[in-house]
Image (tube, rainbow, N blue to C red):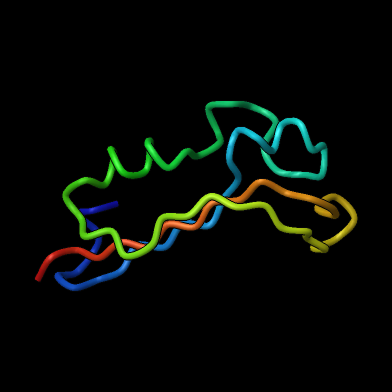
Length: 80
């Protein structure tokens, strides 16, 4: 993914954290398909991290994604 970014390009990730498994409100059901702040920071350590936040919010994105959700946002930029 890093190689696909142009210099100065942004990588955006919006996903679920492992805490989502306890909510049963959608998202992946396998731990290996969920993100943590440590995982993203480590995998993309060669980028400048602009935002990295784990949080909970209520989603209403269709019948299978409704209710309290454990989310993560990650925004990083490739150095010019």
